[in-house]
Image 1 (spheres, rainbow, N blue to C red):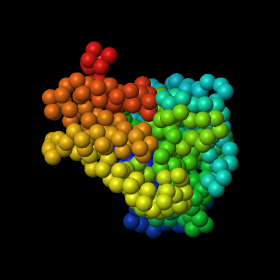
Image 2: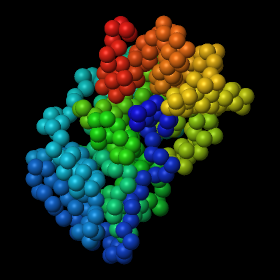
Image 3: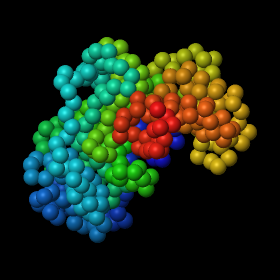
Image 4: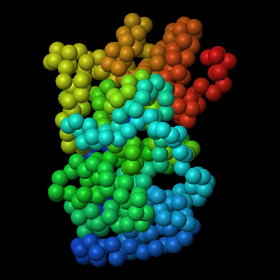
Length: 390
């Protein structure tokens, strides 16, 4: 399940993979000036909606799809022509973007030592939808462009955003850029702020897409986050769900790294990809406390990995399962609790302790609703079980 909670940290966390996304370059040389490269774009369909070929010089060039049709574009999709033609036909584009009730439960302001962040305007209760919005920029991780369109000059990315409305471009360019002068500012902004999105209703690991959001991309990282990022395909929106009560004026955070990685692994990823050293409460614990935290997270990771195997219960004891659940609570990893609770349910069912299995299934369902809401793909696993779980 691509939206699985632990395989890559959490499916719902801010993930890039092992390297920042970068264009796949064609094996040929071409003029290098930015103006010349932008001139190489050509409009394939000018209306309903607009689709632009990124580079007429390349037989398999990426294409830019601008949405919605018939008015200044609020967002751009970057993918193959066949893909964007299918995306253009989705009925969701005939519907206006969902609007959050006013006043919003959060504000965006300076976060000491972090740049800008999101803060609660009031008490936000666990399981509450904090924010939802559509991406302004969406792209398959792998893009096809010429060698003269690279990370340093940003030609490819600048060409893509050139068809956006002024307000959408302004919102994008207002986001943080964690990359230095060796990279173009647009590439830096996108790479700093991408979140995972889907282009299929059922998450598909072969369609690895990233999206950049005007507001959601403002949230800062914490190794014990207060919110969970989830991408809901039906309204085509990213969402933040409060995983625990967030007090008034507290910062709203998500995780950019695997929740069950060690402190050293998290720190390396955050520095390599996001260019900062984490100083959250978990990372700044005394050395012995860090070791205990790492051990708990390692045990959670090891047990969660068993959930995907046919021998998930081999060599496992009830004590170890329950200890792992305790570790999830001690680490404050609410978003990670779902997969662990599902594993516990499976374990007890395998042990023929059906009452205990059902109890853990109920917990898992409740946790899914808390961290992903009614659109959670995982809830489909409970279809037909409502009489048992009620």
